Image 1 (tube, rainbow, N blue to C red):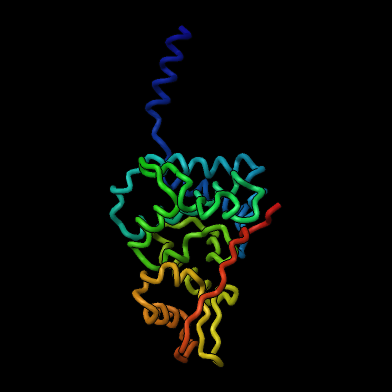
Image 2: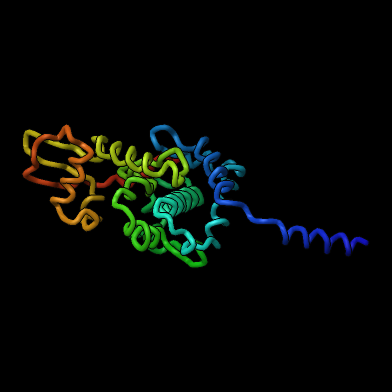
Amino acid sequence: MNTILIIAALSMSLDMPGQTLEEVNAAVQKTYNVVVGRDGRVDYGQLKNNKELMDNLQQYLEYVASMDLSAIQDKNEKIAILSNTYNVFTLVGVTRAWPVESVRKISPLFGFFKRQKWDFAGEKVTLDDIENKHLRLLDNRIHFLINCASGSCPVLAPVVLTPENLEQVMEESTLAFLKDETKNRFDEETKTFHLSKIFKWFGDDWGNKEGVVAFVKKYRPDLDWEPQKVSFLDYDWSLNGPTR
């Protein structure tokens, strides 16, 4: 009798459907609600010490590990899930290493982005793979959605991305980044744009320097003058949250 019950229980567990994307997104949102501040700073210590919050992210990791990326045809849906995945991988990676002062301390020479492997869509990928092989092909505004857990990065939006909210969040995040004087400064007196190095590292995504300037001025029409020089600010790699 016990054997029969065990077999029946196993059969039922095998028949149970896996979680949906909506369910794992909701779990991530519960964690965001606790650890992501309005200013985008992340309380990694609280995350590491709260099993329930980490379990929420683990649900997401398990979902994307075996998902079929090729089945997603809608562009906004693809940007949303890829960006969420990048951000959740980053959250988990930093939290596992916490306390830490910078992602550059987790692995030397940007290994956190270039060498640390994650299970995604049946493959082993790096954060750089997600960004460079997938996201950059879709929209140059993705650079303001994904968060590298560092001071000079665009802040982590406190909402999980969906096809429905993607455009609004992407526009708001881009504008917020270009209005943040710690990340981009505009000196009318010297006619200089002091821009984030994101625009240098990924400049091809805007075509050329003129393309970068045109993009900036689209979101900052108040800059009613033409820059004679474009320079790039030093990048702050300190952690985007308490380090202890």
